[in-house]
Every structure is written in C-alpha cells, then in structure tokens.
Length: 356
Image (cartoon, rainbow, N blue to C red; front, side, top):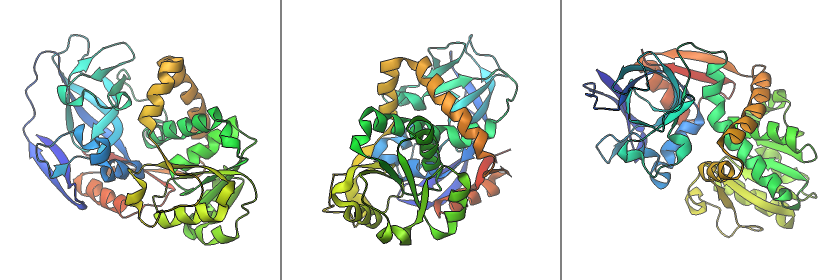
C-alpha cells in the first residue's frame, strides 16, 4: 500500500493522508520506498510558490486542487525492472511526502541517475537528480538532508554576489537570520568574502540562537532596524517574505542599498506592503537557474566539489547549535508539517521524518 500526504493548494493547512495500491512497474522503472526525509521551512516554500515555480508538478496527485509537498531525503530500491539498478540500493534526492515513488531512471551512471518520467521533463534538473549511495548508511545523513538543499542556495547567492563584486557594497544584510539558508550564506560569505560585513536580522526570540552560531558580525532584531548603521554601502538578501520589512530596509539604507535580492517568493507584489520601494528594484534569486548556469560554466563535478567543500565546513560547526530529532509515523509527520507551516518550529530543531 502506498501512502501520501496531500495538501490543499489554496489552503495549505488542509492536509490528509491518501492510500493507493503500489504501482505495477514497466520495463526500465524502479520503485523507491521512502526511508526518511528532512522537514524544513524550505519545504513550505515549495508549497507556497508551488504553482508559480512548478513544484506541484514533480509528484502530481491527479487532482488539480491537491498537491504533494516535495522533500529531500533517502529511499531504498524495493522493486526494479531496470538492469542497471538493483533492489537494495539506497538513493538520495527529491522525494514526495509519501511512502513510495515510482521512478524511470535515465542517464544511469555509477554516481546516480535522473528521473526520465514524462511529467518531469522540462523541470529544473537539480530536482531530477538522484545520487546512488550503495546499501549502507553514511555519517551525517540527517545533516545532509536538512541543510544541503538550502546550503546549495546559500553557496549560489554568495557566488552571484562575489561575481558581481558585491555591487560595490561593504556589508551584507540578511533577514530571517535564524533560517538555514541565511546561516549557510553567512558562513560561505565568512569563508570566501571575509571583507564583507555580515549583518543578521531576526526576531527577539531567535537572537540568542543566531548569536550562538558565530556566523554574523552583528545581529539585530527587527525592532532594532531603525537604529541600524546605514552609512556603509550594503546589499540585502530577503528570506523573510515580509513586504513591510523589505520596504523598511529600502527606506533605511536609501541610496546605500546597492542591490536587493529576494529568495523564495514569486513576485514582490505578492508580499504586500512593498510597492514603490526606495532604492534598487528587488531581484528574485532562483537557485535552480543559477545552479544550471554555474554547472555549464565549470562542469557538474567541479560545481559539486565546490559546494561540498563549503558544506563540510558548515556541518562541522552546525552541530553546536542544531539538534536532530527523529519523528515516526503518520500523525507525527502531519503534525510536524502543520507546525512548520505555522512557523512554530524552533530554528535549533532539525526534523528527520520516518513514515514507517
């Protein structure tokens, strides 16, 4: 029996488990049993912008009103009609909030494969890649699933800024400084652009956590913003999605705001309260496009090596402020999804979900 958590696209708080018979494999296909996946705010972003960016298209339900939220995690090959992939193999990649996934492997190599299913053609390649892991678990799998998808975005933002000489700025302002993507960006900037001052904006409740990370030169609460030093040329990266906050940043820094980047939202007008901004027009940063561009420039292997080098350093430090928690069973997973949707999960918690 295959189980999947469906959510109402127009009301993400409506969710329900659905059951269906396991699919019958055709030649070349494999069936993955989802072993475990990470649940982060990133998954909520996939749902919020699911229509605009096509995230609902990866795991269609057959009902246009309902979708399955994508996650990153690990799965086992439990059935195979593919001569190159054996039952018992483990893979890491883009999975549904479900017990199983039917995949049509293409371009099979020792390191991995892509899903060649018809409905996934034309979708961003970084979401269609599956990494082959052999049969044994490896260290830090939880950290990989929790952080790596977000960290790749962090890496790409820093690369984009540095490639543009930081637009002449001397400081980097990040909203939602407790978020995993912001933490990752702060660390990569610290390592690769140490001359850039890193400023984190966060809520009062998360300030101590953000300071504990040691990744920011300065940590401010949102209430502190009016008193922030805006004398230095600055670039901003907005992870918060709050139009009024973004407007306040533009107004406070004025001409000293050299570039304004938005991450994880479809359009500025949908954020509310951010019309007629002072300073530069905010530019949406879409990681899949940036990743494909850099891969074409330096090659997939070099791209992965650069990301992995920084990621290893990030994970080594993250254990000081992140606690990995295991969740088991349908009720726990659904409750965790709703808590993440309501922004009720502390940033110090890393959630690993096991359906069975």
